[in-house]
Each structure stands twice: as C-alpha cells, then as structure tokens.
Image (tube, helix red, strand yellow):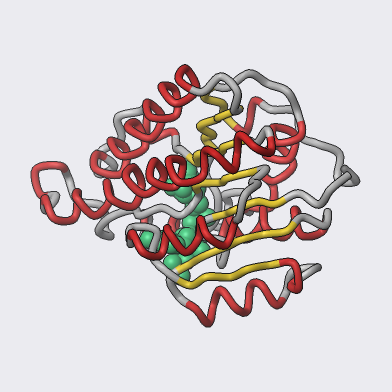
Amino acid sequence: MTTRTALITGASRGLGRALATALSDRGWHLVVDGRDAERLGAAVAALAHPDRVTALPGDVADDRHRAALAEAVGPRLDLLVNNASELGPSPLPALADLRTDDLRHVLDVNVVAPLALVQALLPALRAAGGTIVDISSDAAVEAYGGWGGYGASKAALDQLTAVLAVENPDVRIYAVDPGDMATDMHQAAFPGEDISDRPAPETVVPSLMALIGGDLPSGRVRAADLVPAEASR
Ligand SMILES: NC(=O)c1ccc[n+]([C@@H]2O[C@H](COP(=O)([O-])OP(=O)(O)OC[C@H]3O[C@@H](n4cnc5c(N)ncnc54)[C@H](OP(=O)(O)O)[C@@H]3O)[C@@H](O)[C@H]2O)c1
C-alpha cells in the first residue's frame, strides 16, 4: 500500500496531537500546523516518524498560511482533519456581552478556514479517494449558556459539512463531535475548575481511526457512538 498522507490542523496539543501520534505510529505522512512554532516542533519531534512530517507554524485564519499548507500537501491527500479551533473569550461571555469582533474571529477560525482548506484541497482529496473530518462539538446542537458564539460556529461547520457531502458524493466527509476532553481548550472554558474527570483526548482516537478506516456514509457522528478501532490497526 502507498504511504497515506493526512493534513491535521492544530496538531501541537490536545486531540490534534493525539491523532497525529496515532497516524505517525501507523507510518502516515503528515502535514501539521499550530500557531506556536516551538510547541509544534516539540510535538513533531515526539512522533514516531518526524522525518515524514511537514510542520508549518501558522494561523489557519491566514490565507497565505493555508496556501502554504495546500502546497505542502501536493497532488494527493487521503485525509483532511479540520481540528484547529477558537473557543473565544474566557470566561465564556453571554451572547449579550460577546464582542462582535470576538465572534468574527471565532467564525474565521472555525468556519471560514475549514471551508477554505476544503476548497483548496478537494482536487487532492478526490485524487486519493480521500476523507474529510471536521471536528465539531455538542455545543453545535445544544444551547449552553456562554457557548453561543463557539456553538454557532460549530453549527455552521456542521451545515457546511452536510452540504459539502451532498455536493461531493465522491469524497467521504464527516462532522465529528469528539465529546468532552481534558485539554487546554476545555480548561479555558472552565477556568479555575478541576477538569481532570474528563477523558484524555487519546481516548477519542480509536473512534476516529475506525471512522477513517471504515466505510460509514458521510454525515455527522458522535465519537462516543462509533465502535473504536483495535489498537493494532
Ligand atoms: N476539549 C473538548 O472538550 C472539546 C469538546 C468538543 C469539541 N472539541 C473540539 O475538538 C478540537 C480540538 O480541541 P482541543 O480541545 O484538542 O484543543 P486544544 O488542546 O486547545 O488544541 C488546539 C490545537 O489547535 C491549535 N490552534 C488553535 N487555534 C489555531 C489557529 N487559529 N490556527 C492554527 N492552529 C490553531 C493549537 O495550537 P496553537 O495554540 O499553538 O495554535 C493546538 O495545537 C477543536 O475543534 C474543538 O473545538 C473539543
């Protein structure tokens, strides 16, 4: 089998890093990003095959950075994971107090950037019979106080994913709700609270691997509803 290639945004911490670790363990080529170059470099150095990784520090909301990511991918892409995400201000403000500039930034990172990456990479994904995974949230479908800006962005991402799936039946495209995870983003949503009872992001990876390696039709899925892949796959 030819070596497969994945682009994972936000792979220096949390879920993106956990997924990059699993894919690198399986020999995948990776293109990864994150804004903090030092943290990204350290994450890549810890992977099984750092020599098979192109790490491009940058912000997914930046047009030139996204163009560089697409160029690094080349003509074929097996997997695009739109994982990098912006929570918005912490503590989470009520919608009445959400600054419109902050909402615009959340939408830029969580909605505009993922679609722009899909647009840039659809030909490469088609060439490889590839898969798109857009990381969503239960905040897209539940009305939690304080989560209005972020939740609206994830609801928009879900809808983009659903319409892209209708328009591109030759590409598998999923919106995935990973569930709560003990990560920096989750801590920012609950400042000062002990979040150690939430599962580690690594616990979600077997479900993502099952989705990536399986043949589920395009759609919105909750990681908790997937049957996790065997650790050896
Ligand atoms: N944690 C949860 O409970 C939870 C629940 C539901 C959904 N999710 C979703 O799961 C995904 C992963 O979240 P996480 O909890 O793993 O987050 P995290 O631990 O905060 O990690 C976020 C990653 O994305 C990078 N990143 C953030 N903004 C970026 C930007 N504008 N451009 C490029 N990279 C950026 C971060 O690196 P830099 O900061 O260096 O850029 C980091 O590598 C997100 O889509 C999130 O919305 C999380």
